[in-house]
Structures are given as structure tokens and as C-alpha cells.
Length: 109
Image (cartoon, rainbow, N blue to C red):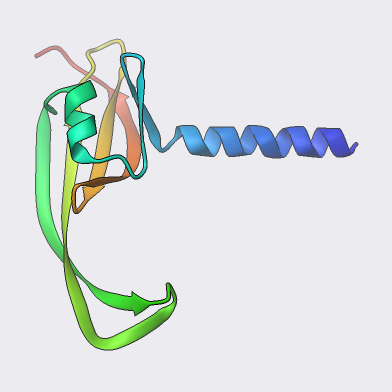
């Protein structure tokens, strides 16, 4: 019975990690990769949306520092992989991949 629970947990972990990954050719783009790596292996995105967010600064990962804020550059890069593949949206914060989402099927240019 324990092996069944362990197998289910391993499957769930693998499924969760694949949601934050994007395969470009034989390379895998994952959380933490630099924007330059994404450009090198995936090429220019079909669309880019940019904005700046302001967030509070946290010390030691949990303690909020009142009055201290930082600006974060957020970009969403969309890759259209054609009508037979799902599009991908790559979220970047300050030039590093923060996450990858799968969108609907792509389209012809």
C-alpha cells in the first residue's frame, strides 16, 4: 500500500513540475532560467507584454520591512507553436523565468 501512495506522490510531483517547463527543441526552459537562455533556445516570442510592479521587501524570507519597496519588471512572452501545438506563455520577473503556462492551440500566421 505504501508503494502505491509513494507512486501517486511521485506522479503528482512530476505533473506539477512539468507545468512550469517549456521544451524548445531538445532544451528545457524552467523556473529560474535567464531571459537570454529562453531567447537562445526558443527564439523571439510572438508577443511581449511588459509592466512594472511594486512589492514590499521581505527580510529573511518572511519578515516584512515596512516602508521598503522594490520595483519588479514583469514580462509575459507568448510563443505560438502553430495550430497543432499548444501555445506557451513564459512569465519573467527581472529577467528570470518565474513560470510557464500552457494556453490554447496556436494559429497560422
